[in-house]
Image 1 (cartoon, one colour):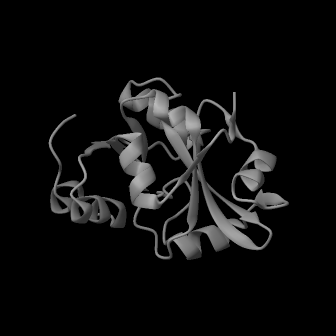
Image 2: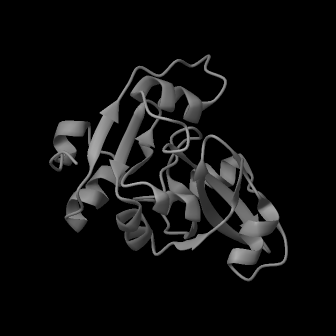
Length: 166
């Protein structure tokens, strides 16, 4: 993996600031975001030249009244029932977009599991551990951060569980 990038060099998002503060190894990848893109994650995978199973999207769900972050490959979808089960909940629904933005401090399409305004419990799809590194949003559209899945799990206190569907 490439050397750490300082937040100032990458445009400094809360996600990159958190990574730098934690001393984690990561690489920032920037690309020109197309506002007409149908899928932020698929766009990132294509722009970075990596397979969609290595690029993970950050989704916010409401589980029994508690906002929870789900990090799943862009190549699939989130299994809400599996997500609820992973945290001992009964029912999960996608969070209201405005609530997700307000709580995380990020805009849709740029929500990062790192450096959120209010740290939410996080569940990382267990498929992440089959890769040396994965990419997640660095906190804005057109900016991804590549890091080891173990580092992402440690920094977000994530539970690893099979929450993605192909």
